[in-house]
Length: 342
Image (cartoon, rainbow, N blue to C red; front, side):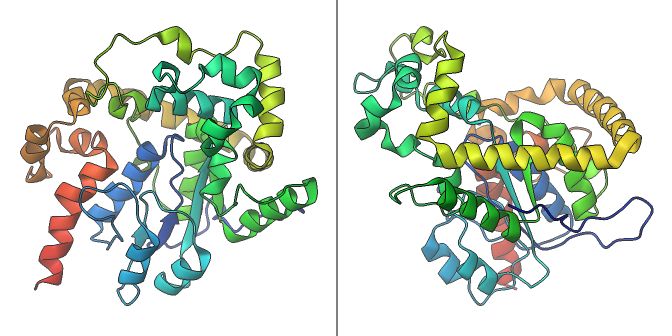
């Protein structure tokens, strides 16, 4: 695609903080960490979210239809990008944000989360990487899985032209695509696009393992970790996956390239901001070290922090460590229902 710069806010120029935002939260791309940033900002500023139904992680097409006549500021939970419906719901000045991850890293994360390597009907990660076509029938859901969230239909017969046309379409529709593998750099660029502060972009990583099938108690047998390891032949794995999930790789390569082009264009000022961001994140990790018990995701823990005062010393850490599904179910749903009932 022809690269043209998306609008951003050059340093020193006045801008208005973005209030209306759609985030395409792709599974296993660090999306919970990113969504938490949006949820905290939105809660602080009393924005209205379009939320999944309580107990669900996904915003469905039906959910979009149900909220058609409401004033919505943000959609940040798992939802397939549906331009037609989202444009009807969201204000005209809405900023569209997405996320992509290097596909081999994404594959391993997905395998870990679902514990595929320890399910008899599924190949180990190494077996799959060495010949993904052999397992197409049982593993078909892994074909172009990231681009699927943006509207790519895996059943479409694919050629280079179609793949690039799709990438170009997403480039035109979205204001920015974060790259999970370069999270800090992505968030600094996002800060300028949203006209938010560096403090607004602070985060504590929500590791995939915290909500894995194993930790949910679904698996009681001893896990075979080797079945979740990459093949030793990483070059073969990447070569195969580049063919098997071509659209995912085309999207990742393109948006990763544009990310680094943006960073280069900002020169030394960017590196200075990155250094400052690193220092603030380090301080935050130290501050939040004592609140990591939230990662057990117990109901008791959630109930304890729901009504916590914002002046509490642990308030920010507790909010940062809360998974999006729990955030919406126990904090935002009750808050928005209360507002709507007045």
